[in-house]
Length: 343
Ligand SMILES: [Zn+2]
Ligand SMILES: [Zn+2]
Ligand SMILES: [Zn+2]
Image: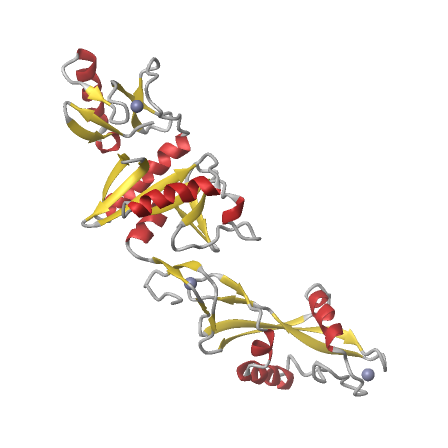
């Protein structure tokens, strides 16, 4: 459903009209004092208002000479939200802009920069997406994609779209309030807010994660029994959900680095000497508190995995300065309100 038309040789965009202007335009066209042409096929266009109250144009039912495909109300709404966010940031936004062999849902223009925003409410294959992206690249246009269903080749094992600087691609869906929502990383935003953030440069592609220098560290002591003397004692796990600078959760994998971090060891000692921790019997990772029997490293792995779900766990929390930790090879779209990005 086009948002753009030619009214008496002048280009117009439906959503820029007030209710009154829209009604008067409708009358003019009815009377024949103005003519409305659709740019896609140069055929006559008509005015419509969707059930959600969005003004747009339509073809006549008898027009067969146009490749315009039917659009969902969500697709229409997405285009409108993108246009509004572009305008807010001083970008000119032209819906259904076509050039050479492509047509963008919304083309945003500011001085020499051009961004094509594409909304895929219906499915589109990876190869078609890449093919279309290549056309944009060739014509010096940055293509930015919003997919309701991400092609399987373009998403990771956890169903999230792969972050790729050359193919910016984000997942969208419609929430229960009929709002179009963008999900990227662990963050959710309305499409309007997302495009607003993108154009005001609060979203940036980064190749690494930077962990926040201060982390809320959670240490849980769990009970275990010595295989040799049979006595009850404790060991601990560190909750490994760390926060990145862009507020994503990061499941820390370089375990040793954090388990043997001097500040963490300091915290453990602090706990063991405290009133709340004085009954904890911790003899070290690999030996019994009572009889010095050795605990095999491979047992610990399984033990730590089950530990979270035990009954008598005691958890301690503290904000700890762990210093700057960089995680390489972590392509992602980094979001920062104050532009303090991971990279
Ligand atoms: Zn047409
Ligand atoms: Zn023992
Ligand atoms: Zn980041």
